[in-house]
Image (cartoon, rainbow, N blue to C red; front, side):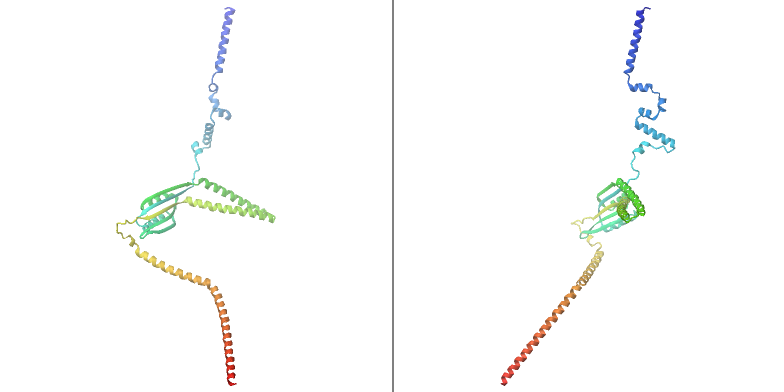
Length: 335
């Protein structure tokens, strides 16, 4: 083989090597990384190296699952736990219902029975007369939150439901914030109490007491507000409006005579109570004006005595003048 052929072969090998280097340098860095990295080494690699190869979120999830597995805790869904909200919600339930009923008084008795069985209470009750023989009522109920829907269904069955409204107000954040601030104020109150015991001078005592009174006022206010929220969460509020059916104008009905005896007795007792109220009011007015009457009576007595004395003095003077005039006339006749 000649030197020329050897040179050509050597040049060919060099050219192929250069082309190979160019192709390798143009390959994807990611492909190169996966071709060169040993997966067994990755599994045992340090954390920083593993973070470069595994997305951060997946790495954190795998790390938490490993910790749970090593600790022997129950196998929980870590992703669901991380996204879940507060376990306890504080919700205020309110509702209102408008009913058209046949007899308002009878339905009020049934409402009282429903509330009693639900361990609730009637917060307010107002019965009024729409027209002669037709009554309506407005009732506010407080029932346990767990029995809100059953009670509402029982109320709906009492008559024709014209309007039903329900409302849920989530006060969890407000409740938790108020509870947290209350705990901080209570801790501050305890700390100020300890400082007050260590105070030496009168000025320090007065200053600490002033701040302590302020903190106690805030604690009382927050406690009252928190109790109010607890009550609103524990007991749902239902406003019930009752209205008797309208009497048709072309129909003769005996509804105006219903409960006639009760209405007569109520009217009679009401008139007696009115007279007693008027009489008691007159007594109160007379008692209130009695001091003024006494003063006026004394003034009238003084004026009467002055006028009487003046009248008597004037009458006596007139009598004396008459006697003197008579004496003079008699003396003139004798002379």
